[in-house]
Amino acid sequence: MSPRLLRLALPAATGAVMIAAWYGLHFWLDAEMRFLLPTPGQILAAFRDNGSDLARAALNTTEGALLGFGFAASVSFLLAVGLSLSAPVRASLYPYLMILQMTPVIIIAPILVLWVGAGLKSVTVITFLICFFPLVVNTTQGLVSTDRNLVELFAMWRASRWQQLRHLRVPAALPYFFTGLRIAATLAPIGALVGDYTAGSSAGDGGGLGFLAIIYSSQAKYPALFATAATTCVLGFIFTSGVLALSWFALHHWHDSYERSDQ
Image (cartoon, rainbow, N blue to C red; front, side, top):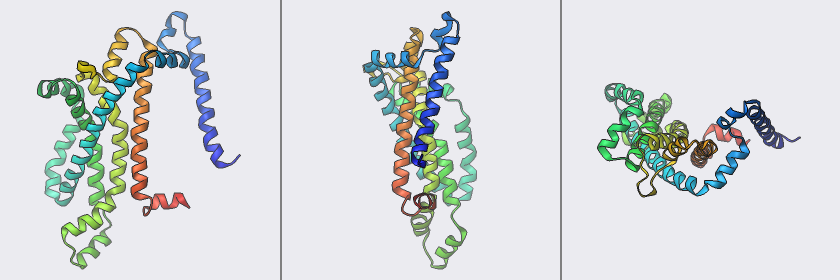
């Protein structure tokens, strides 16, 4: 079997084993407890029966995730540039970034509802807070980790700080930035889901997957609840795939990791 076919066959075989084990565990449970673990077939039926609600909620969650993710990427990059240019600024602000990261979102959510109202705005802010920290940390690390020999070469040629930033530090930091983006891409749908769950609103059909999860849980629709979780996973794959494609487009012509993989 060729290596390419083997890379496809192994995940497929693992998936088949996992599905078989899932069915086995479902039927191993007592009859009155099986509702807690719906079978894949029941979950697919829930997708069919609740497809329109899931699609609408997924679009609302995607909107909040995209807005929060986009704002986090933009603000973190600008802040990382400022942090990289001044060690005193880094020392002054970094502890507060740590505090922001360690503050539980579930505590912030009621405050955000009071400040900006329930719904998309709160979901966007919560997603922003969850995505922001890995982005700013990775990007700052990349900007301050530029090869010292290249920095000295630019200084020898009397390059300005702006020229050094534009032509050396930012390109060198791009792999770090995209690493942060990949982390944030997996967190963005989760952040939007948490935002929906804690600060969402169904006004004007604006409820997202988190809000839908509350409804299905209260109605004991467990297959639909699993379908909601699976939809969130699909959103995560879409976000991560988009970032990987963007990373390949930006780096594959010159970065070592892509050059080696192409050989």
